[in-house]
Structures are given as structure tokens and as C-alpha cells.
Length: 581
Image (cartoon, rainbow, N blue to C red):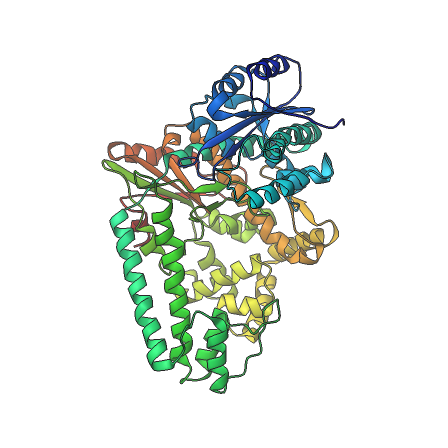
């Protein structure tokens, strides 16, 4: 391909040239934005870029925003972005009525065809459409450093800036031209779901989740006071000035006779929670110090990661617009940032953190989540008939598996035995070795070895399925999952033991995404707020809560694609944490 023709619009003549160019025939029109930051609700839209495989234009928003708006709204052909949700937010927040029905996205194209490769525009372009695609970014970074500019202050007419911006549209159009025929031939359903779910997520993020600012501030202060008290104890009683500094704490334990053996990947002595728990168990005298370090870390992380972050990212109406990344993980499951709401713990502090979120006046929250979705998918794909029959017969999966492995009546299974089985099944799904398996199941290594033998004997179809997936990972590094026809890959064939987990997680994520798209076309869609793992959160008018709950429970389950139903339970609550009481 010829070198790209990159341009900056600064005059009426250049604007006319752009409109003449826009009227030419092309397969793909690419659209991009440059902004003052990552948060569409509080940062500036600075430029809009429009281009094709040969030409890219940068349009300053403050001077020529009407030109960009008119060009986008009037264009009737297919348009394409890379990570469309980000640009859609900024454009629509600034008044652009984007023709979503014709919008495509090269990020899911890359992610579907090359799931184990970097999905970013520059690395994908380097691999496929333009060697040296990342050089402009490095030149801009250097210029911004010299000028001490930020993304909000760098001059638009700085050549390194507008050339970098214009080029992105050319790269996007070229990637679409290369990848879309493959998408249509091999990944059409998965791609259409990814494009649709990005637009659903855009709307969900726009609504935002309401926090209780007084509760959040109070919890932050309370946790901080707990930290201060504990730091004082370390300083005055233990004589460790800063127990958050690993080096100081390690020296204290060494000076008192403890020998460290575990090291980090960089070769330093390790002081993670596992090491601290081992120290606490090895000597009664060490126990309060080791437990205190763990508690201090826990207090600090909870305060900073959640309550302080909630205050930082709340808008003027006390709503948080977390950024949901639709294909962040290698499994293509969703994640979230600014702030991270995906990693709120299920148990420890889980209710306390979730209580930060509540329904607005006159509203209720509905939390709907799948029942044991990953286990059920694994059982179905493996074709383990007694487990399929048990689930279809209404029996609890983990209780039934426990009764089979331990050879005892279903009704005699104890909660702690069920817990061991649940954790053991998780460990099996994650491809854990004996040591990790024992740790996750809460049993000894010898018991873990015997347990795995019994597991494989009692559930031979699951064992065979796991071995088959493992072999595919070792030989070809990927497997195609059935629900959307997505290729699930691993980073390296040496990690073949991870493929069962990745494939199962990925398929569970695909079910959730497909159901989000279905729900978006019902009366419940306008109320969706957040996907969290296998859960969807809604905020609905109180008088409509039961009706919307019925719609969710009718649409969200998947009753046909697997040998067992992927059932859903929904709860109407005032605070998100109420579900976890």
C-alpha cells in the first residue's frame, strides 16, 4: 500500500477538500478520537479523526466540531473504530448522533482471529498492515515529555500529535479490510455479539451506578483509623517502623530467627499472604506479627482499591461510570477499571463494599446471576450423564458429586463436605497440580492425590474431556467453543493445562454477553447497569420491579444450547450488598 496521506484541517479550503474526499467511494470509513483523558463524562473531546485505507484527517473539535458531526451523521456506509465503546462515549456525550447500525470494530476482529495476541491498534497494525506503526506514538511521547504537555494540553497543530492521530484511522481501515472477510467466514456470530455488546456496555456505563457518598466516606475514615492503630502497635510494641515495607518486616523476622525460603520471580525473598500464614502457623510467638501484617495490607487495600476509588470516580451526581472492558482477558470475559468493580471479594468485605451502591429515590436494584454456570457448561460439554441427570432432576450439583465420591446418601452430605467438593471442582477446572489442588480444596496433599483418583474414577467423562482439551492445548494451542464459535487460546502450548479453564470461562462469558444483547431488546434493557462475572445488575423503578424481574428470569437463562439448563436467580434489593446478607 502507498504511504498514508495524513492531514490536519485548519482552514475553510481544507474543510471543503475533506467534504469532497468524503463523497468518494470506499469500503471502510474509519473514525477515531483524541481526548483530554480517559473519562468521557469529565474530560474534553479534542479532535475527531476520519479516514480510510489511504487518507486520514484530523478535525479539531472546538474549531470544526460541526464539520465532524455532520460528516458522521450523514455518512450512510459502514464505519469502523478500534475499541468503539471509548470513542462512542466521547462523540455521543458531545452531541453526535452516531449511526450505530453501521458501526464495526477492529478490536474484536483482532481478538477473535488472534485471541492470544495483543489486541491494541498499534501492535495489531505492526503485525499485519504497517511496519513501524508504533513509531508515531514514540515520537509523540518524546515531544510531550520535552514540552511537558499532557493529553489535555498538547497543541493540536503539533505535527507529532495530529500525524499520530490521523494515522490511527488509516490503520483501522486497513485492519478492517484485511480481517473482516475472515470474520464473515469463520466468526460471524461471535463478532456480531461483541459489536452489539460493546454498544450495550456503552449505554450501561452512561447510566452509571449510584453510591452512598456518606457511607463511602465513613468507611474510608474507619478503615484509615484501623490502619493508624495497627501501625502504632507495630511501631511501639514490635519496633517495625513501616510494616508495609517488605524489607523491614523480613529483617525483623530474620533477626528473630525465622528462615525464609520462598522467593519472588525477581529473586527477592517473598512475603506474600501465603508466606505470612505459614509463619503464623509455625510459631505462636510470630503469629500476631504475621497476622498483623496481613490485616494491615487487607485494610489498606480495601480502603484504597474500593472506598477511596469510589470517591475519586464519582461524578457530581454521585454516580460511578466504571469502564467495562469487553475483551480484556485472554478468555474474552469482561473486566472493569476506573474503578475495578469485577474484583470485589465475594466473601471477605464483600457485603461491606457492595453496600456502597444503592438504588436511587423511587428505585430498586435487581441482581440476577447464573447458577453454577461454569460447572454446568463443563458437565454438559463433557457429557457426564449422571451429573446431567442430577442437574436436570433438580439436585444440587456439588451435593450430588459429594454423595457419589464419598459413597453416602445425598441427604446425609454435610455442608463442609460439599464445600470441599466445590473447591475441588474449582481446582480441577483450573488445572491445578496436587499442591495447589490441596490448597484450594482445604485438604492435605496426600488426600488431594487420593481425591483426584476418586474424582477421575467416579466422573470418567469429565476426566476424558479434560485430557482431550489438554491435548488440544499441547498440540495446537487452542480450541473452538460451541456457543458462539469462538477460538479459545492459551499464551503458550506449555500452559495446556489452563485451556479447560479458559474454554469454560470463555463460553460462560459468551452466554452472558449474548443474554445482555437479548435483554437490551426488552423492557429490562434500559435498566442494565453492570455485568460482574456471572451476574447482571439493574436499577429499575420500584413499581415496575416485579415485572422487570420476571422479564429477566424469562430471557436471561439459557435452556437450549446445553444438555443442562443455565438457570438464573434474581433478587430485588435496595443496596447491592443486601443480596449478600
